[in-house]
Amino acid sequence: MNSVEQTLSIVKPDAVERNLDNEIKEIFKNKGFIILKEKKIQIEKTEAERFYKVHETKPFYNDLCAYLSSGPIVVMVLEKENAVMANRELMGATNPKDAKDGTIRRKYGISIDKNSVHGSDSVENAKIEIDFFFKD
Ligand code: IDP
Ligand code: MG
Image 1 (cartoon, rainbow, N blue to C red):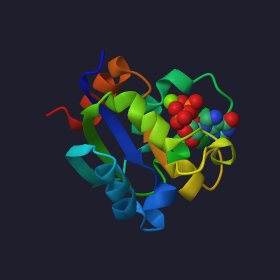
Image 2 (image 1 turned 90 degrees about the horizontal axis):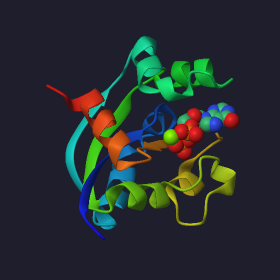
Image 3 (image 1 turned 120 degrees about the vertical axis):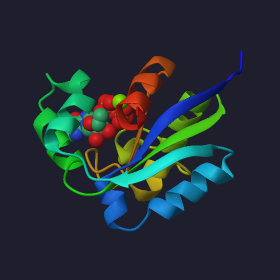
Image 4 (image 1 turned 180 degrees about the horizontal axis):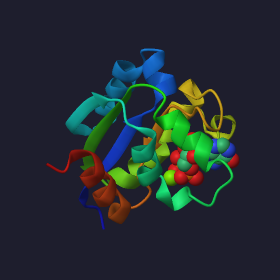
């Protein structure tokens, strides 16, 4: 069953730093995503720790949170049919080296940690992540 979904996308510091945020937004729009909300912000490390709490036992957790809070990011709510999985496919594998041609991480990712974009991994987590950044 196809249904219209919303998902959270983040253009991470490595990509914003290289001024790729507009280019990446164009890719989403060209693939039929509607950008419902967006903002450019910089978060505190403690906020990054809350956002990535599922990874708190991983060896890379501290570096990951330091990195996400190291510079400006662009957070967006994307809408499209099957948006969660469509965005995951468009992003490509976590490690840019493993990402398929035509994916955002293949094109722009520098390394497994500086992989340019975040995307929610389930409809349930998308709701939590959208609330995290856009609840008002
Ligand atoms: P995802 O972003 O593709 O959903 P996750 O497994 O949820 O990947 O990991 C969250 C983020 O943590 C990744 O995007 C990446 O930036 C970082 N990360 C994941 N695995 C590693 C690793 O083995 N070393 C360093 N950073 C990692
Ligand atoms: Mg993930």
